[in-house]
Amino acid sequence: MAIYFSAHEVKVGLKDRTRLKGFITELFKREQQGLANLQYVFCKDEYLLEINQEFLQHDTYTDIVTFELSADPDITEGEIYISVDRVKENAEHFEVSENYELHRVIFHGALHLCGYRDKTKKEETLMRQKEDEYLHLYFEK
Image (cartoon, rainbow, N blue to C red; front, side, top):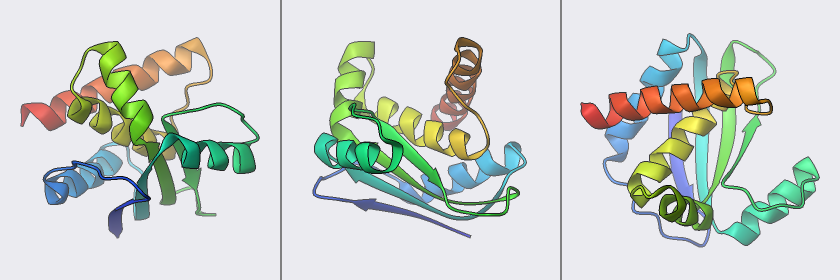
């Protein structure tokens, strides 16, 4: 099992990556989802827009795009692309720190890979509850 963080033409102030990797591993265990490999790629708006257009046929800016790459539903292999531009804007909008918002989006992507969706109001409510739960666990330790 491996979790990787990389950046595409951006700098990301992601501190204590070892602890974060351990926490993400714990998130998957709590959600009873196997984890093989997970790659987080931090990028700019324009790069993520291109991915959104090419692979999802969405012509909108977004903070995250998540790809499940495993054929086995019990074992996760995935790629998660995160726009640091959107993270900064969302942090201002929601009046939270960029660090807090960055972690929310990181956990959001992991939760998608655990099977959570956010297309309906009910799904979105559950997703927000799970994000809050994991943010609380991460930042209160």
